[in-house]
Length: 365
Image (cartoon, rainbow, N blue to C red; front, top):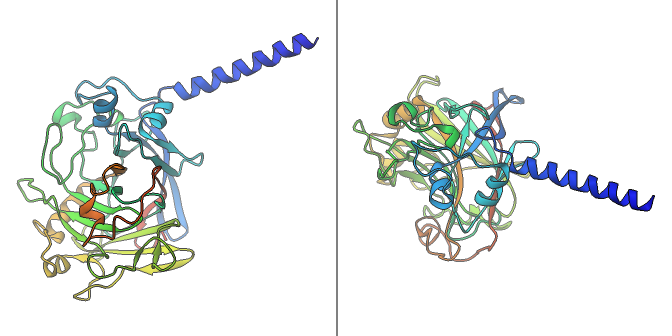
C-alpha cells in the first residue's frame, strides 16, 4: 500500500509539472493579455481588453525570433516573454512588470487590440486625460523607464511596407533619424525617467516627415526645480514609492477636434495631488509659448504639428533601457545639468506600469 501511495504521488507531481511546463511553453496568440481602462467620467471607467507584444527588432537581434519584419514566423512563448525580455503581467492583467535583462536590454513593448488580433490599439489623446501608476524605485542612474506614444500604423506596416504586423511587433517609428526598417514619425514622451530625474517631451514633424529628434521637453531639474522629483521624503515626488502620473491634452477650443493648446501635468502620491512645478517664464506646462521661451526644438509647432500626430492616433510604447555598466550612458537625462547622477544605482532594476486609464479631462484621477 505504501508503495502505491508513493507511486500515485509521483504520478500526480509529474502530471502537474507537465501541465505547468505546457502552460509556460504555450505560444501566445500574438500578445500577452493586458487590460487598460477607458473612462467616461470620474469613477466611471470600463476595462478594455488589450494585449502586449515585444518589438520585432529585439526578437531578432538578440534571439533570432524575428529579425526581418517581412518574414517573421515565430511568436514568443509566455515563458520566453519572461526569461528573454523580462516581461510579466500581473494576475489582474492591469500591471506590466519589466525587469532589466542584460542580454537584451531595453525591449520596446507595444499595446495591441488583444491576443488573436493583428492590430495595434490606437489611442486618441486630444481633449483627453491619461493617467497611470508607476513604480521605478529601483531604476537608477544610466537607465530610462520610458512610457511614450508613437504614430505607428495600426497594421504595423503591413499595407505600406509588407511587414507581418503587430502580432510580430513590426512597424516601429519615432522622431529619431530614420534607419533600416524604421521610418520617422511623431513621438510623445509621457515620461522618460529614472528615480532621479524625469522628462516630458514632444517631438514634432514637418510636412516632409522630417522630425525633431531632441524635441521640446519639460524637465524640472535643469529648470531649477532640483527638489521636485527624486529619492526620499525631501522631494515633492518621492520616487522610492509608487506614484501616479496624470497628463492632460488641452485643445484650443475644448473639443476633440481642436488643435492642441498645451500639455498639462500633475502627480498623485499618498492621497496628495502634486502640481507640476512652475519654472521661469511662469510656465508649468508644455506649449508653443513655453518652447519659444526656452528656445527648445519645436519643428512645425506644438499646436500645428503635434496635433496631426494626435489626430492620427498613437500607439502606447513602454520600456526600460540603458546600460548598467556605463553610468554615463543616459547622461542627457540624469547627469548635470539635467540630473544629479551618479548618486544611485541598483544591480537589479525593474519598473512597473499599471492602472492605465484614458478618457475626458477630469475622468481618470
